[in-house]
Amino acid sequence: MSTIPSRRPDATPATSQVPLQAREPDAATLARTAERAAGELLAPAAPHRLADVVPAPQQVQPDPTEDWVLPAEAVIVASADPAALAVAAQLAELLRPATGYPLPVTDATAPEPVGGIALVLDDAAGLGAEGYRLDVTTDGVRLTAGTATGLFYGAQTLRQLLPPAIESPVPLTEHWALPGGTITDAPRFPYRGAMLDVARHFFAVEDVLRVIDHLARYKLNHLHLHLTDDQGWRIAVDSWPKLTTVGATTEVGGGPGGHYTKADYRRIVSYATAHHITVVPEIDLPGHTNSALVAYPELAPDKVAPPPYTGTEVGFSYVDPADERTYDFIADVLGEVAALTPGPWLHIGGDEAFKVKGEVYTGFVERVQRIVADLGKTVVGWHQLAPAAHVHDRVLQWWGTNGEDPTTVDAVRRGARLILSPGNHAYLDMKYAPDTPIGHDWAGLIDVRKAYDWDPDTHVADVPATAILGVEAPLWTESVTSLADIEFLLLPRLPAIAELGWSARTTHDWDSFRDRLAGQGPRWVTAGISFHRAPEIPWPTAPATLTTAAASATSTASPTPSQRRPSRADTTAL
Ligand code: TNX
Image (cartoon, rainbow, N blue to C red; front, side):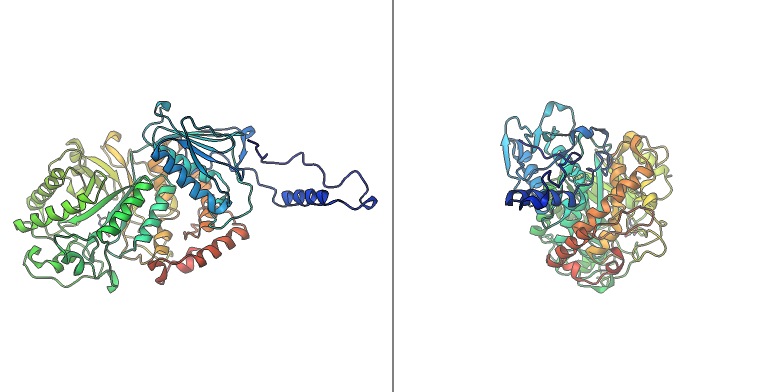
């Protein structure tokens, strides 16, 4: 298959040897001249550098003699395996809108690029459960991985190596150049996540799917959904129907709230699965339960229904730890949630239960941990769970702000592993700066550098690196009311946490990260994604054509429910 050179240093001069006035140019000459002029007008910038990827890849070997341009007739060929073919189809869907190319997908026993893109499943390549190798040569692109997940991450890298115009929802004329060379890549931690609080404010399924898209771009593999809190219960439970008919109808500020039906929730899970993301559902217990008590006063310590809560205080509500009915309730709820959950984790909260203290708290947590284990799931909880006995594989989510906690260290000695979400680095509901419009500051201000400059392995004193399962960026939504608000707080800090989770510590370098992150800005603009133009990032100025394409695309797309709500971020995000 022919390849199109990425540069034209030796292009024939446009003027002919024959004096122009000597004879009229024929149609073919005119066409050639026009084509040349167009080629010069569209003279491509050199392709991206192979290392310009977020999160930083493990190994990059550029080879500028192997630069390649995606031709209009390219085919995507994948190993004859349904999961590999599914990634090939996703890659084609990513590349078709901007290129306007057909990019047919085919399968083969031994796929070869032949001028297109080959996705090769190869157990023997030694690339691990999530790793991949990307070879760009003048013959095309070969993506190799031991699993479909590895191929999926390779496809995300490939997408970032194409010009930002690849994010356009409408066809653009571009030179779809890729830098030659080889990337060999694999993650540092197995758990790389973000959390969305859908309880303080409720977010429509479409909004959650869009958050999943953002996670997938940066190779995050877990979405933790904080499904219940004082202000609203967001997941249907058939055996306790009033949790949603009564408990879901409020939110912070008094809005209408909402909830996911089981069908909605399955849609989220299956979209996440297709993006190689595991959903971690959280039912926060024993505190943060006002919405459940409004629906079922029998769960309250005084058996009296409290008023619905639409404020932002914490720590006042709890289910009655002394009543057996409470444990029936928990077993029913967790049983139904487990049945909707293909992943291994069930998050049981455990934070800020200020009124359930000492042995009563510990005893409660131990019973709930057993319920989770009996359901065949692995317990995850906020690090307040630490004093309770260990159950097999349990994971604590650290959200402290000073990296010192003997109780957590002791739980680790007894077998717990940690997900790190330090409040002062990873809490994406913290404000960037005093003058940015939404968010909190109780854990301090978190600019991009603060989100990036910490090390998960050494963050909690006296916890060995072997106990660190990974990182997670929580987004609490007391002050977040729309998808634009979510994007404003996630971007550009989510990629910082993603890089901590994915990239080898040896690649950690603020200057490099800052420059690579800057390259994401035009992609977000082109895709119509809101983000905070953090002043410490050297954002390039997006070409006018890209901004226009994005603007026309966002104005024609039908808005999701939360996009229709007015947002404080709307005026500042773009
Ligand atoms: C603390 S972090 C909480 C949440 C709040 C958040 C606001 C944690 C486990 N609990 O209930 O939403 O602060 O930043």
